[in-house]
Length: 292
Image (cartoon, rainbow, N blue to C red; front, side):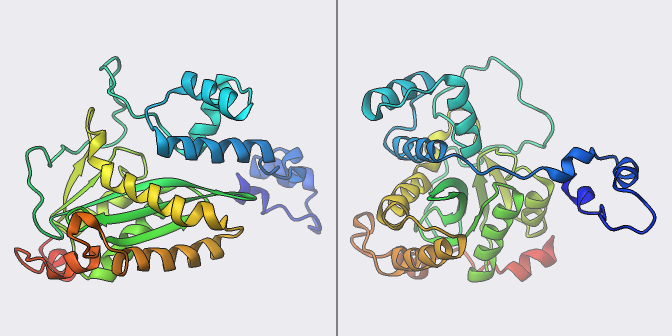
C-alpha cells in the first residue's frame, strides 16, 4: 500500500490527485497520514516486560498484570498487554495441551535432537530472535549459535522482525565460518518457516529441525545469551540508534566469543572450544551446495 501511495504525483500535469488515487486503488486520505511513534509509556512497559521475561518467562498475562501493578504501580488491561507482547514477539513458555490444530500454512519439520548427544562443533546450530528496547523505539536481534561450543557464529539487528533479519543472521554465520552445520534447529516462528529461510538451508544440504510442543528447554543456551547481552550491554548503554546498537553489539559479541571465560568450559572461551574440538569432517558451504 505504501509503495502505491508514493506513486501519486501532486504536480502531475494531467491527472488530479483524486484520479491518481482512484487508478492506484488507494484512499486519498492516506496521502496525509503520518505514522505516530510509540508513546513513552508503551516503551517503558515493553522495557519492563522484557526485564521480567528474562527473570521468569513462564508468567502469563494475568500474573504479569499483577507484577506490573504491584512492583511498578502500572495499571494495564489484558488487551493492551497482549498487544504489546505481540509487538515484542514475546510468548509465555509453558507446556500447552493440544487443544487446537496447528496452521498448515507452512511445512513442518521433525524435531531431530531427541536422544542426540551433541559432542562436537557444527553438529548443531540454533537460532532465535529477541526484542531490544531502545529509548525512542525498539529493535530485534537474531543470533546463530553453535550448540556445542556456545559460540555466536552470526547475528543481525533490524527494526522489523521479519525473515530478512533471520537471513542476515544466518548468512553472517555461513560467511564467517565458511561451514555449514549438520543440523539447524529453530522454533516454528514464521520467520524460520518461510520459504526463503528454509531454501538456504535445503540448498546447503542442512538437516532442518524444529522444536515441537514441550521442547522449550532446547533454546535454553540462547536464552542465557539473551540474558547476558541485555544485562551486560543493552540495558547499560541504552543505544539510541540502530548503528550505535550494532557497533556496541559487535564489540560485546567479540568479547563474549574470544575473551570472556566460561566456567562450563573450565574457563576457556567459546572460540577456544569451537576451534580446538574435533569434528567428523570440515563440511564447507561450497561442498554442501554442490551436493544439493
